[in-house]
Image 1 (cartoon, helix red, strand yellow):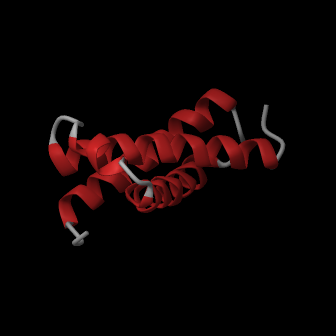
Image 2 (tube, rainbow, N blue to C red; image 1 turned 135 degrees about the vertical axis):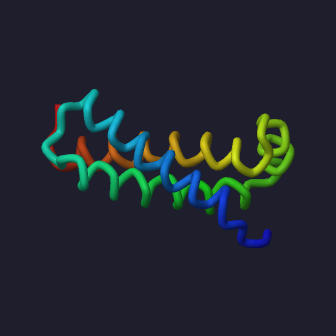
Image 3 (cartoon, rainbow, N blue to C red; image 1 turned 180 degrees about the vertical axis):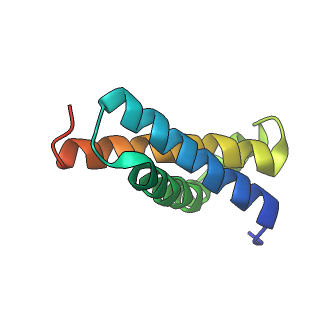
Length: 93
């Protein structure tokens, strides 16, 4: 898989948004920057892991918008998951 700049940047932004949504719902004390960084890391991580799963290529290809659509989906979900997990570990509600 070749590196594509625009879908990657969109995925990172979506990860930050997903992290902030999860942090706001959990009311954790990470602050805006902490939630954004956690979301970015989670979104990037999920975007790297999902293509390694057998059959995930068909799933990613079915998302509307191509690479940008999958960047939004994977970034947002990864950001939500990472921030929620870290929030629980750090004692969030």
